[in-house]
Image 1 (cartoon, one colour):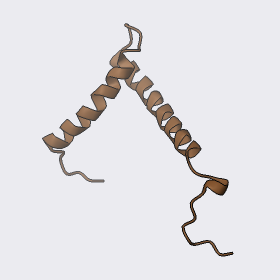
Image 2 (cartoon, rainbow, N blue to C red; image 1 turned 135 degrees about the vertical axis):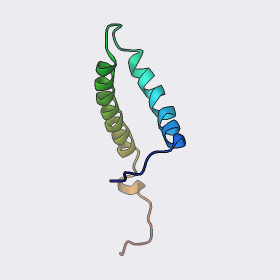
Image 3 (cartoon, rainbow, N blue to C red; image 1 turned 120 degrees about the horizontal axis):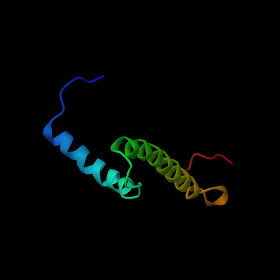
Image 4 (cartoon, helix red, strand yellow; image 1 turned 90 degrees about the vertical axis):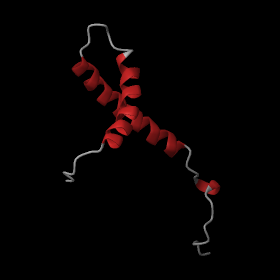
Length: 75
């Protein structure tokens, strides 16, 4: 594991990615939800988002006669 301290720029970049995602989940949570509740739900939502992305990518892959011939097939 890398134990080198993070730079301000690295943390800023991570925060710029994290907080918009956090806000999307937080805005849909009940008013009484805590930050911890939001983080737990965010973990589940992000897991689902990754699954949906993988399914979408798999659905868009060529198959059967739609596959591109890369020249490695032998007849």
